Structures are given as structure tokens and as C-alpha cells.
Image (cartoon, rainbow, N blue to C red; front, side):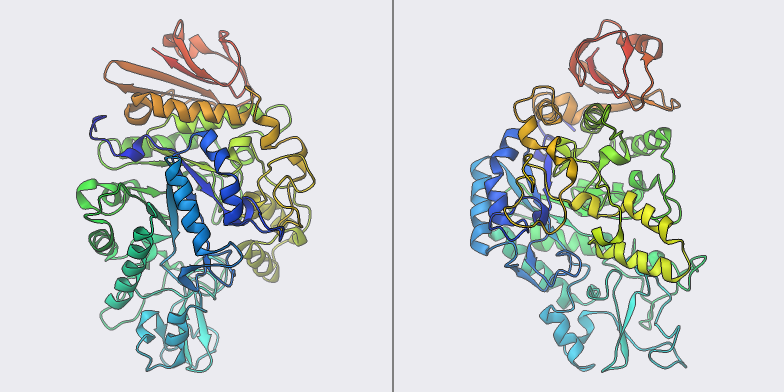
Length: 567
């Protein structure tokens, strides 16, 4: 890919806003569009190119907006459609683009489509969702009568009984999130029409929620297949029937033709794809196939877990290196990587991959940022990451709000798990870690709201906040500014080839980026140990420092130090 032919998003950095926790403008304790508008100068100063906005659509909020009841309305909690128009105009005036969340694997059970579908087995929209009778020979409501044995991502069965009709509907996530039936062409056209409406309004693309789940493996007679049993549960693993369904490429290619093809403005499409492999991602992101520009994969955020996200294991940095290196190599000649440490569904990176102790938090946050942003791909900054926000110090179940976390606790404890152990896993991995309000200043509610925040502010905001870092050249925030500017200024950062060095080292992560006559050496020490740099990498001796997260260039590579060197 030459510099001249490269799409704009190869040089871009995306900033994710989780609106509920970003900035409250009306004092109700919940972030909103007015708050996003108030903080645009922060994003402009940071230098980001794209704002990705998590769902702001009308919703009962069973899953914090990922259960949508009206795709073409803004939830009053967040503001108005006119405010969104104002946001689009304000972003475009600053040279930034808007990426909206697209949630079309499922809707809310309060969406008019599902309300109509549920009204009668003879409803014209009955087939817009996955309705199935009980298993043959069993009565509705009997244990095991569900059409398949699949386990929901939010614990329990993926099937919910509708007492009125005696049939079940499918929901891979919460029971209030019924899955749309993409086999029905009317469903697909309704979704495409909605997407075109948003693009016509000025939106610049979509991040597509669990988009690889829209195709289900359905037998010719219409039944869905059981999955292999999950040890220790009454359920089966249904992912083989929906993570990479037989028509997924057909659906995404059709979406591209019907929604994106022929539009003059440069758009961005990002597919969130749990379970996607490198080989599959090459097909999804191959420009010749016209599906999506890049995918979100989850391999690297699954390395510290066992059978589930709640089965927390120690993270080996060598495993992280192997995983990220595999994706760099796999998409080197075809497709494109998205680069992220955390988001609204993942714990804070500095607590998970770094060292959030008082002595190393700043250094590990900037080290991790350097490592990620110097890879080949498009980096994503999750709100608060640029100031080193960390996990919340949860002490009791009452402090959690996330439906996934609460459902897991109830299910696990009711089936015999130790309550203290379950709470310990929640403390490490709960999505609420990422959803505490952004820490703008040291005031009681961190400058997030004049009211009571919907989720408690992390008590460390007195020290760790944007105001304290804004004019500090050594801060995490200042380092993020420099990293983003480096991608804009040096084509080698955006487009250079990637080569892993020291693949067997347990704590030092090193690689080169090369384009034409320029080569950068990136060295990151992911530990508290000091190393002799030239012993590890003789080529580093005398190299020019392009960017570092610690002052000076001694012979030793200091704990959590990152250097970008020009060879």
C-alpha cells in the first residue's frame, strides 16, 4: 500500500466516547450530547481524527443503549436529534468525523418491529425475529424444552418463552435483546434504509456491534443446531452456529453495495467480531471483497482468562507479543488492523496490562500507548485512557451497575460458586471499570456533573484528571498528543512494514517499522526490571531518539520505558 493510495483512516486515530460517562451538561448525572459538545476542544487538542459515539438511540437501557427501541431517534437521556446535527457540524468544522454505533444483530424487545412480531404467530413481522416452538415432545416451559441448548452471553439460556404464543424467541444477549432474523430480506432492507438515513444526515461511518453474529447456521427445515455441552452447566456452546455463519460474507457484501458503494465522501466501517480468526479477518477486510475496512478482534483481551472472562488468569507478556505479532503478520499484505487496549466492554488497560501502582502508573500508561500506536493499524483511544484512568476499587456488589456483571454474580452464586471469588473476578473484569465517569478535574464529581453521577467517580480523580495534566509536558495526556502527531507526521508509522524482534523475551517488546529508506526501532519494557538496551538490541546504540516516555537516553532500558528510535 503506497502513501498515495492509502485510505485516510490508515493515518487516523479514533477516540471512543461512551456518552453516559463522558460529560453531563444538564446536571442529571448522566452524560449527554450537550456534554460531548462541551468537550470537543479536548479532542481537537488531543489531535484525534474520528469520534466514535457509543449508542445514543432511543432505548429502555437494559444494556446501556445496546438494546435499541428506535434506530432513528435520540434517547431523551442523551439529548435531541438537533444536538446530534450540531455535533456533526462541529466535528466537521474541526476536521473530524463521526462514527456511530450500529447495533443490528438484535433490537430491544420494545422496538415496534418486535412488538408487532410478538403480537401474533400470524404477524407479518413474525419472521423478522427467531421464533421457534418447544423441542418435539416437550411442553413450553418444561426444563430443557428450549429450541437449542445455547448459553446466553449474559448467563442462562438464549431462549425466552412467550407465554401468549407458547413459542420461544432467540436472544444471544439479554432477554430484552431479541435477535433479528437476517435470513429475511425485509429485515436487511429495513436495516440498510436506516443506515442510508444516517449517512445522508452526515454521519461518516459505523462501528458494527457483534456484526459477525448476524448469520445463523439454520438447517433446511428451519431448525437451529445444539452446541457441544459446556462443562459444569446445563447449556451448550452455540457459537459454532452464529460466530461465522454461512451467509456472513454475503450479508456484508450486500450491505456494502446497498449502503456504502458510490458515496463520494470517505467513510469508515469497523466490524466488531468476537471469535474472529486472522484468516477470517483477511477476508472481511480485503478491499477487493468490499465488506468492512477493519475488524475488532478479541484474541489479545482473552489471554488472561480461562473458560470465561470471569476465570481470571495471570497474563504472560510473551503471549501478548505472540498474539499481536500474529495479527500484524496476518494482515500485512491484505486487510487492516484495528489497534486497541480497552473500550466500554473491557477493564482499564493500565490496570490490566500495565502497572497502576503509584510508582509506575504514569510510565506504564505511556509505555502501553507507545507500543500500541506504533503498530501497523488504526489506533483507538477509549475515553480517559489518555489521562491514565484505572480500574475502580470496588468493595461490594452494590457498587456494580452492569447487567452482565450482576447476572453473572446471581447465576454463579446460585449454582454454588464462592461469593468472594465471584466478587474478586468482577472487580478485575467488570465492564463497569470502563464506565466510571471521565475524570476532568479534582472537584467532587470530577467535573463530570453538577449532580449525582449515575456511576460513582473513581476516588483517584483528585490526582488523576485532565485539568492536572493539560499543561504538564510530562503527563500521560501530553504523551498521547505526541503519539498522535507522530502518526500524522511520519508515513512510516501509518504504513511501514512491521517486524517483531526478541519474540521469546518475557518482558521486552521490540519491533521495527520500515518504509522506503526509513526504519524505526520501537522498544518497550513491560516490567519493573531494568535491562541493558544495547545487549538486547545492539542496533539501538547511537540511534536517534524520535519519541520516548522517560527523559534522557541512558544505556539502560528502565522499568516501563518506551523508546522510538530512528535507525
